[in-house]
Image (cartoon, rainbow, N blue to C red):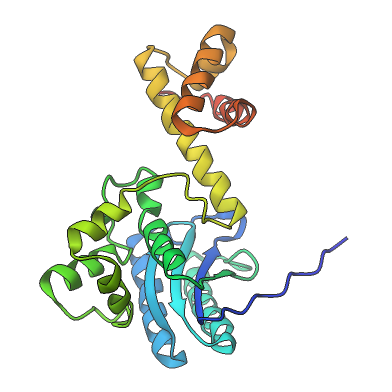
Length: 263
């Protein structure tokens, strides 16, 4: 039976954290040119619909945008951004059908604390995925634009609204404080996207299992899972480092082990 879609919640501040995912988690933005094109669409449609972009990160299989928009234009903006990119993608790669996974996700942002946490979470996406070691090393997020604006007092490149920097100045005295805030890399309880939280937890377990395996000269996750004594030690190590339950860690380890991934 097809379940009805939940009604989109309207923000009292007009600020939303928006996520669009590739259909079946496909890497629909795999190449740099794809990410650049998506970003250009985001900028042009933001101007068209009066949307103010506060932060963004374009990953290979999904996109995060923190934005301010009236409720009606939120859907118009995202529908046009996604449909224009889908036409480009299908033409470029000779494909047909859906490019994005259903409708976009949105959560309301109604406090300054949640606003700052969303900015941190969005900028840290490529760090969480172990693609880069610093938010400034990833070229397809707004982190570098924040840096240039705060440090060099440059005007934004047109992707970000000037308005967001008034909030940043109220909360952070300088770039160093803003950057250090991004390094508070905890369990991110503010995340209310179930898939995002699961993916984040999985990556944390994978990272700790890698550390444990290398310290104990174990060559694959399968070996680690197959030896009860080592598995017990590894789960205890991971529980201590992440605070997750043993059951959840063991389930993630089994997923890692099925890939027989070399370490």
